[in-house]
Length: 98
Image 1 (cartoon, rainbow, N blue to C red):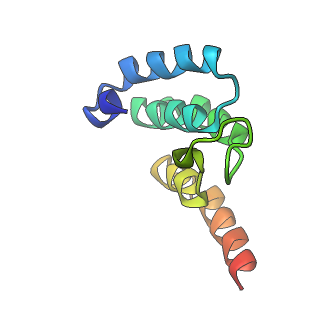
Image 2 (image 1 turned 135 degrees about the vertical axis):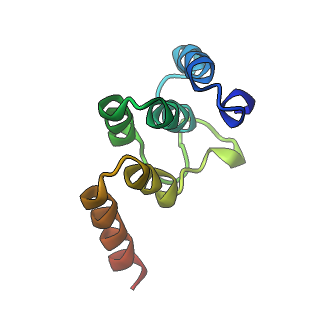
């Protein structure tokens, strides 16, 4: 995450992908790769990664920081100028809250 925060997105993505080989389908890693692609301008790749992410606790891994919140995914849609997807996700969230 430090490389990501330092805006070293290509290096961060490479490390996330290497970790994903060791920890397959780990949602936090998928989200990290998706956000790297968002900021690298790889819109199609980012959207593909975002579609693979399951919200909530990652049942395969039991760390407290592995929970993926809805806003972490649909904020990426906003950054990607995918406003329809962003609004769809907001509507889904609104229906679950009400």
